[in-house]
Image (cartoon, rainbow, N blue to C red; front, side, top):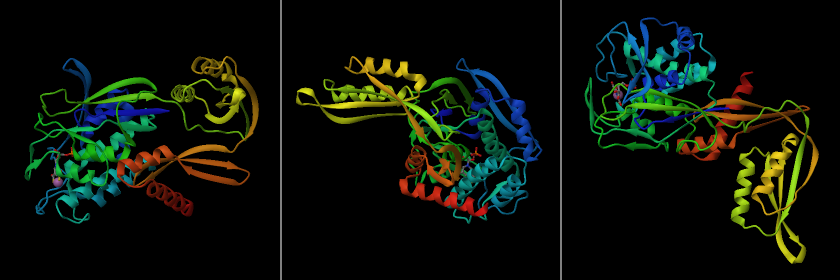
Length: 412
Ligand SMILES: O=C([S-])c1cc(C(=O)S)c[n+]([C@@H]2O[C@H](COP(=O)(O)O)[C@@H](O)[C@H]2O)c1
Ligand code: NI
């Protein structure tokens, strides 16, 4: 499974995000072909690989045939020409030939940003409007991010704390404090970590960047310790920050913890050892090593052994063909000088995973089937991350997943 990690030490914007994904190896021609499914013209994509601070990365920009007009809305300025409301943008995306998943994710980000703008400028959601040209830039940025993620085959996205600058930036309506109001608004009710650099007096996190993070990032923390790092990519920011202004994207191959099972019968190997002379600390360490090596399960059972010794039985379940790997790990990490093992028959339910889009982001659901019995279980890790990110209870996320599942059942 592919996990993307966003190292946002210099914030995040739509352009930086796409730049970093192109730098990871997204095929540009394929990217353009997919974007053409939006059926909007009047823009050109510019991408260039160059070095900043001697580090090579990608500069990505959407060039408008009309002059680019930044910012989502012009509050209090209703006399001007071509504007697009949220509903226009949703219809444009909905009527495109993009996949249902990309449509849904893109509309969700636009709605999130529009809600933030509506709250900051005290407008109704229906009144929020976007400059035609600025809106097109944002549509390409937002839809483009989801296309690039899809082309890379990313299953899961994590991120560092997002760094922003401080001070004020100048936009059409005057000065805005950094983090800009729409970014702060989108943080409400979430635990998305934002670190401020007081030595950088400009904006590093744009509303588009924050909207994308809110939609796709399922967990925040340091760079993953596990998994094979496949590639690194840098997407450059446009502002002069006085520091290295880029978003670093790291693509990992991580273990398939959520495997598809297409059989209703299989065999597992049970390996056991009785241990009466090992500390709790080193038993815990041994368990971690066995789990990290891909054991299906590892567990301890309290037992009484000879000479009245309270002890524990260590049991490991693994694939039969991995016997040598796990026997060696047990001998290496525990005090035993021998292990027992037996192959066991299992009756199992066939398992598949599906992704459910919820207001708390994408949650994986395990669907198990056998002889007309169907069990659907939301992945605990995804629900826990979403609950932390959005500052809600685990039960609220699980309830939302159940609601989405029953809605889709009713629609089919
Ligand atoms: O034009 C408006 S109303 C505007 C509002 C806000 C708020 O935070 S409210 C922010 N901005 C700035 O516009 C640019 C473009 O942002 P993108 O997300 O489209 O890249 C950025 O500097 C925003 O902070 C404009
Ligand atoms: Ni605004």
